[in-house]
Amino acid sequence: MCTWECALEGCALGKWTHALGKWTHALGKWTHTLGKWTHALGRWTHTLGKLTHALGKWTHALGKWTHTLGKWTHALGKWTHALGKWTHTLGKWTHALGRWTHTIGKWTHTLGKLTHALGKLTHALEKWTHALGRWTHALGRWTHTLGKWTHTLEGWTHVLGRLTHAFGRLTRSFGKLTHTLGKLTRTLGRLSTLEGFLRE
Image 1 (cartoon, rainbow, N blue to C red):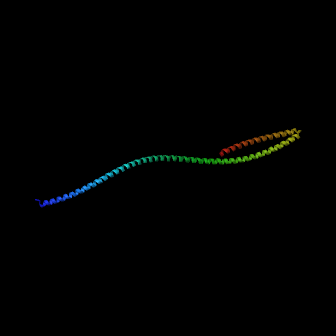
Image 2 (cartoon, rainbow, N blue to C red):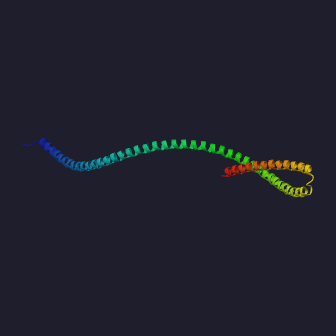
Image 3 (cartoon, rainbow, N blue to C red):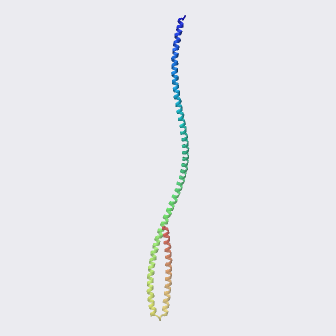
């Protein structure tokens, strides 16, 4: 016979069996959910792998760009150094040009003084040329007068000899003066050539 204790044990066993069934059902649902989460995790893991691969490619590309940038930076440093050297050289040339400009200014000032002196010399030469013309004209008149006196005073041979000697001295003086004027003219020509060369 089934006693009261057996009944109670059967009732408890049924409850436990029912509870175990509910837990088994819940565990099945959790297992199904876990499978879905595992599938989703696999997809996320695959996506993460693709992203990791893409990140690796970007990291490689960034490394190449960094290497190229380093080369360009090195080249820029070399160009900057060369530019500094050229700037230093340009400063030296600018300083030298300033000195040459100062020297040219001094030469220009000297040339102005020479030009002024040449103008004065030209003016003096013109005056001497005019005086020479007057002396030549006077000499011509004196020669003409001397011819008349020579024709008139044929008997005065001694006087004529003295006048002829004086005329010879005057002619030699005129020759010396002409020679001096020739030298002055050549000097003037050389100064004009120098002035033309300096103007060029």
